[in-house]
Length: 207
Image (cartoon, rainbow, N blue to C red):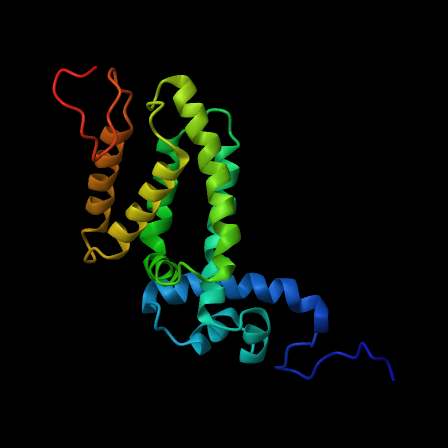
């Protein structure tokens, strides 16, 4: 009897290990929708159901909800990295894309912000630093931002933007994003005079 016999009517064929990558893809897509609509407390069973896979498959790929959140965020960073590689891309483009992502992923932003010391977050931070550093250097060279702006300043602003959107009441999130970006734009603008570090004790008249 052939091992490739068709599955009984109404039952999906068991593809075994071949289904792994496809199931992972479905679970990540489903997690975006379920966490967007139901918040970070949405049951993981709802993610499995939306993906059309069993809970066993879900837990094989993602042992907890944070693992799912990191996977979604990792894909978001891949999209941003692709954007950063475009020779005309700037930090303004990055913040445009981030704002769009944050508006659709507020629960995921909250989950990740609540676990800053999770070792799974380390490579995400490194990936973010690389793409931000590329855009920061490009913008400084083009005169779009001041040389005083460091990569760490931009990544801090990104975290602030994400939380500002995530923690704003529904209906005011876009406004929160616009206001936050206006603050960053002012802070990052080129400066004619060097700005003294906060807490400096220089007296008036000192050059």
